[in-house]
Length: 138
Image (tube, rainbow, N blue to C red; front, side, top):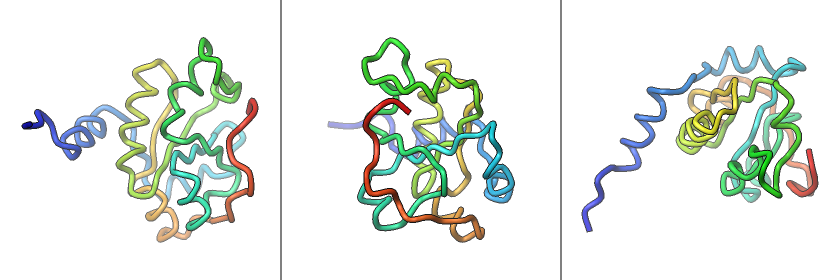
């Protein structure tokens, strides 16, 4: 079976259509009450690497369901009107996720250039992952 697009092509297409925030700008936005950082990594990555303090963990596999008010899995935070900054480890999944949620109509949305790895390398604060992730309405 020959694929018609590679993962790299999908990421490049997404990146061309979304806002990418440089790490230094994202660090400056940390703590802004009008901004929600959204960590889409797997819980095992959070346990191993930590996360941005105060970030919402929204697993990539549930993201579209969590942002859609017609879904039984909807999380109220996504109706807050705040700016959402998505991130994963290397900015690949977050590019795809940011494109998907933007196409669904969630705005304003962006992702962090270079992902969580770049955040840490850029001196962004890191906290241990909370013991229990997900669940109930945010």
